[in-house]
Image (cartoon, rainbow, N blue to C red; front, top):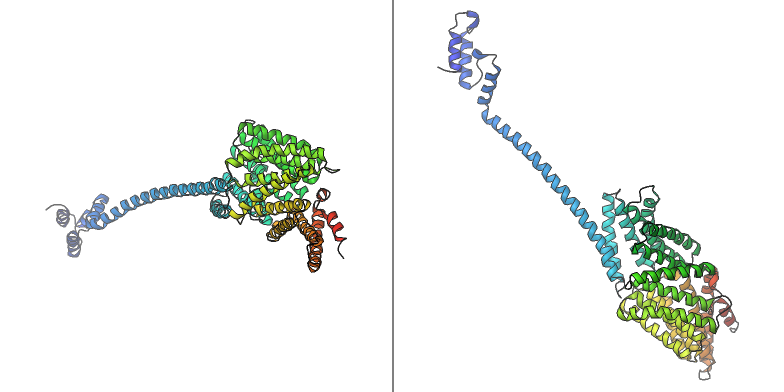
Length: 525
């Protein structure tokens, strides 16, 4: 007999009664324990032995337990591995969504922004992409680079809502709100005392770009002091950027665009000294930029606008325009046309080029009238109407183009009436009035739109009065025309007086201004 059974027998046969089983019961119990695989009293105290018996007794359960422990360890390792993979996937997803949002919001939107009919598509693209970035921003609140991207998104939305020079929805209040949201994101990044790292420079660049957009919008609303504060702050940022990296075409372009918009501001504010000085700086910067990048249409457009504004200055300077000033104006305008015409012929679907070409033609018409070339002036105005009418037909949401078209009809009405073409003048003035009255209310908050609508009412009144004076018009028709003309004069005067309060410097420069309307009203009984 071996093992436990041998130990049991040996204990039962021991000579010392103290070391034998005390009773037959204990002896029987040990035999039973042996049969059941339990530790027997005969081998009490051997820890290794007892543990071994435990394993033998419960080898199935212990085996299962060990398997569970091993499996648990393996499962835990697997879980950790899977969690690592999930984190990698989440990070890749975050990066992919962020990249896609940026591509859609900036690259795709910028590619189509100058195409006619793209306003609605741009709005949809940018709003959806901005929504994705906003969700990502909630997950990465301390990501400065993402904040700059969000600011760019708000700036893009602002441009679509109420930007000047491109297709917009005519919503200046919405645009200001978007610009302010963008400023709130980048200003803290620039104000924080930190190293001039790439993110800092990105925030600076965005702040400079925002200053142009918001400043331009404030100009259009007649808030010239506020616009000057925004744009001069933007100029300081642009100058710092160019000083940090003088060879950067990107920073030089931002600086030239900033100067270009300040030129418009100083002209509107009647600050002749600042206007002339900044105009020279702007043209110098823009010419240098075009020399480096001749295919950059933004620079071409802005240099043409700078020349055009110089032309307008000569036509509207204090003391009135004469043949000499008209000649100087025409020199500047021809420079603008020489830039725009070849670019427009090459890319006729570019809405900004089309708009600026039309506006420059209208400016040339004003100079040509003073140079006693009315036929050429009318031909240029008709060409401008055709260009802008085509833009509006292809993009009904392009409120900016509708505004320019209304101004083109207004100018054409004036020239036609001077040429004695009363009926055509009446048709053009009616078209201008209808376009202005169909503008969104937000668009009519712009002081220039307000002033031009007032002038359109005045021009419509003059055309009606001219028709009433015709011997071919029946008596009843003459009376109806005069009543309507006087009604239009009153409508126009209310708008022009309000516009004069907002930007007094433009009152004397407007030949269709409030003084002219008051004079016309004296003929009303």
